Image (cartoon, rainbow, N blue to C red):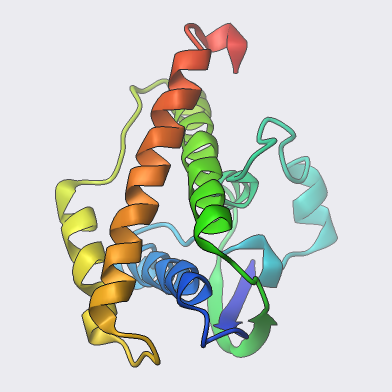
Length: 181
């Protein structure tokens, strides 16, 4: 799998900027050079057809979000990945406060399903990222070049995490047993 760089095409929109910087953080965090399996968003990946078909493509178990996360997880178990920053896609996702909240709430819902399905696939308990992941996440905007105030983007990171946790636990409340996933 080749994963390219995503560039925010709406860098004057703080919600779009925060959402893209969250993705940038995830790309940095989930990198093989740090001993992690790679994660790429589905808007800029390339895979051989044979590998895509062998893994049965994107799972329909994710009606909200995280199908790319699941696909990368399954891909990493069988095939190699490489980040190609020269392969750039401009992403024009015009977000408002409301759509930013809904997007990250959906990511939380998909995140619960992803963790549950991955735990079942690997016969393990649900595992989430360590606290250091979230601590580093909050300070990530301060290491970036941004058009908006870094504190405002960090505050939107906090809002995104509140939305994601809300979505995660809302989705968890909908499923009481593995047969429901």
